[in-house]
Amino acid sequence: MGLSSNILWHQTNEQGFYEILKSKKLRYSYCLERIVPEFKFKPIAFPMISVSDYPLSEIGNNQWAYGNYCIGFKQNWGVKAGFSPVTYCSLGSRSLQVLNILLDDSLKNDIQSRFGAVMYLFAHMKFVQAPLVTKHKKFKNYRFYDEREWRVVPYITETDNAELWPFYDEEGYKVFKKENNGTSLLDIGVNFQYDDIHYIIVEKETDIEKTRDIVGDRIHIFTKGEIVEDVVGVDHHEEILPSQFEMDQEASMRHLARISKMMHDKMEEKFGKNNTEK
Image (cartoon, rainbow, N blue to C red; front, top):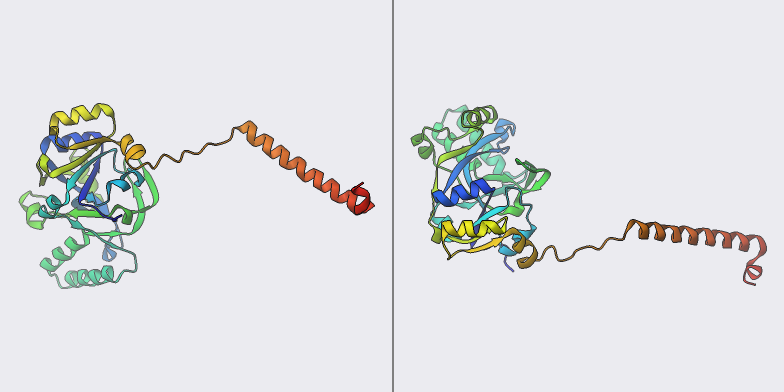
């Protein structure tokens, strides 16, 4: 089985899911990344849209870290829209160090065009694993590499035309969210048509009809439960645990067996093997 697919999954929460479908647009959102060595790995918020490239058979194995709703776009749509796989790296990656050298050179020599280009490349990089904190979940060491992320980042000309910053430091990011009612979503983004969607996964049975009223009948719609339990089958190995009474009884039997053996060994030591066998 292949490790990738022709579907690009965008995972979101219920509110975001219906807003995306009704508007037929994926909107850019500022996302904090700790990836730039020159800035001592302090958080930088880049605008982006993220999707994941993994087979339907892998859906049930992911952490559902970003929400219980998934829109599965056709990969050829994503390529035309400018999405590409991110560059995964570790702390000692040579590619990371080379980019940092270029960034340092652009800052020392005040080369604005190179600075913008290098930061744009940094916006497409991701550590293999790192801590992750979302609105509902926290992970001490999340394996981002398993997401097989594809990403699209707006050109600086796009953010300039929209009168937006191409990136923020952490303080600027907080100010932006505060001024925008707690959201980091932007008005600009990437448009799609319903024909560009192949699969949809929703959280509840009641979502199916509600979704069909928006997108029509041509898209395959599943619930998360159907994917996890039936399509993928990751929950079919249900462990049957013993009751507390059974565990206590088993522990008692093991204890009695140990006591019996100890007594037998003592008797054998004191009276000899032949006498204990009579």
